[in-house]
Length: 242
Image (tube, rainbow, N blue to C red; front, side, top):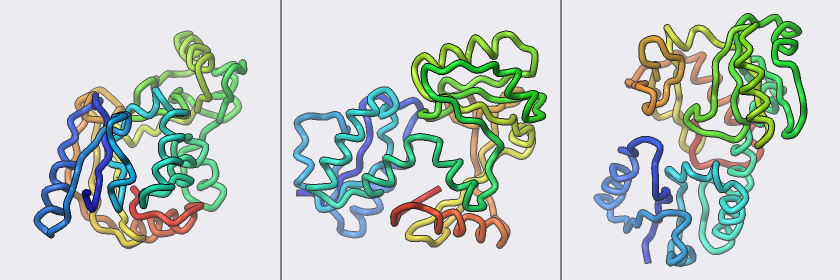
């Protein structure tokens, strides 16, 4: 019976270098660890005292099954983060809730599956010259598209995404191309470290699968305060957050 079971998936969209590092560190500290695919039906999830989500990235293609799995595991093991918080975090509508609490989020419009909307009309109403269209349930920029106002491909992309799920249309943040994106990691509410993620030259997507990279970076006290303020707006207690 492992003390901790780290949860991943069978096929990763990009290499996961950190799960094995975490497992090794825990084992050096005397913690027994197992790594398992959340879709592996041979695993008895009740046999681990703690179940920690690490990289189950294919949940996007199996959302209902994944949420059912988290609800089940939470009844037989200590699941972190909690099932309710995981459910809330799988749909990017959570950004609107954080924005309502005062967190600075990129301006966006949420569209529901099966609806119809003129994407240029949205951009004109918001005063955007460029925008991103992406699934509301997604990881690693999969399904995301960046467009300028007047590009007919934007409407085609939006219509295709709306046929399969909810969609976010957001203002394009040009600073991503030059400054990248800073991620601050918090554990039990305390910041531990931060990384700056940058896209490959000529791209806007920071994920490794598109050539993005990252490096450790210092952060200002104001950014730490912002991260902790966002943490305070979470609907349930969290073990970790980014």
